[in-house]
Length: 123
Image (tube, rainbow, N blue to C red; front, side, top):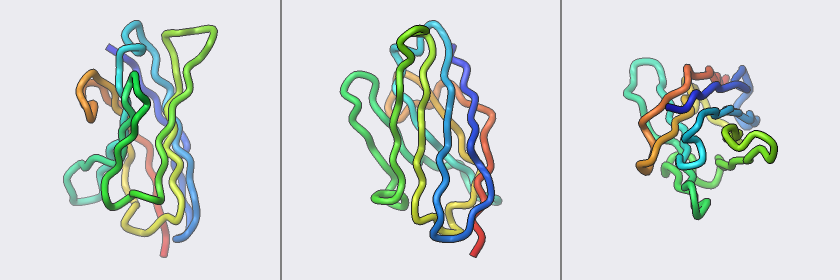
C-alpha cells in the first residue's frame, strides 16, 4: 500500500490558478500510476487526470482538458517517495470540489486514496 497526502487547496477567484501537490510514499510506489479525482457537493466522485507509470503518458477528463496539467517528480534519494502535481489554470466555479490523489496499477488508478484537499472557486 502507498500512503498519499495532498496539499495546496484553497480559495481562488474564477480565472485564477491553484497547484495541488501529493506526496506518495511506500515500497510499491515505483510500480504505480497516479491520478486525481474530485468530488463536488452533492455529486459523485469523478476522474480528473492520470499519469502512467512507465511512459509518463497523461489522460484528462474532457471538462479539464487544456486547463489542468498532471505531472510527477521522483525523489533521487528516497526512491520510495515521489510527488504528484495537478496544476489547475483558468479555474471555474464548477471546479469547486474536494480533490483526491490516487495511486494503483490500473489506469486510471483507484487502489489507494489520499484524504483529499478542498479547492473552492468563487465567481
